[in-house]
Length: 286
Ligand code: SF4
Ligand code: FES
Image 1 (cartoon, rainbow, N blue to C red):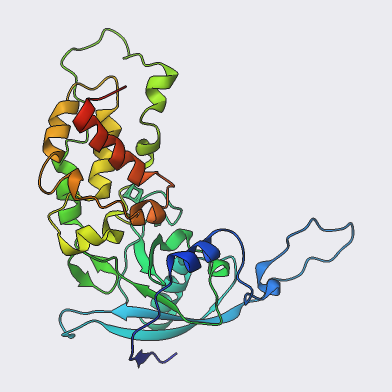
Image 2 (image 1 turned 180 degrees about the vertical axis):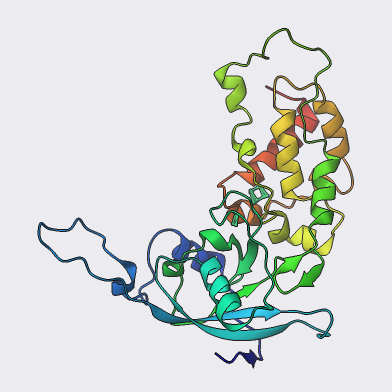
């Protein structure tokens, strides 16, 4: 199918719209026949075949060898309601344009490699279901913002991982225990939320401070610092607090909550940042 270039500025989804489409409540425009069964089948009742339908996906393409600037290209793909935006990208790449470049690995929300901006909001393409979008309108897909664009939906993640490495994301303890290091349930719970990070960068690249100041450590690095700062077995909490008590550290955070809203793991990112700020002022309370 021929791809056509699109001009004009695509509409970005507001936070309220995103909440509406992501919160499990299907928008009114979505055809209920596309959504599959929402009740148990009666005995003897025939199973209805799921129907595919056309979806327009508009991708912001960029090939550094050809393009001066990124350009929007639209693709019509036949989709089922239960498929993901990642499936749409696969269909485009495998059936229409093999040059489309994007990252993915697990396809199940675990590896964190396919964070992208879909209808103006950072999400994992493998967790973004077609049925949660208003498919009467095009779905816009572009690379996450604030990191150098390499090709199509691929950005250079090195600056992101540099910040992650800088906060020393590993357990540091001087003594070698005879047995395992014990922790109470409450001590483990203290940092449980921040252990869930998959380093997808959805939080950091949704942060307006990071967009304007790429030197800012960003939410993901602070989340991973939090994971060790509040671990009762670790002895380098103060080292990490000193690293983050920097011009480009936690005080850059303006509490916009974009990061919490973007996190596909449901981590309370803004809360974790606030706890690190608090620990800088009053010490670490385990
Ligand atoms: S905190 Fe959430 S959004 Fe940020 S990198 Fe980790 S998993 Fe991704
Ligand atoms: S492909 Fe691994 S998280 Fe989406």
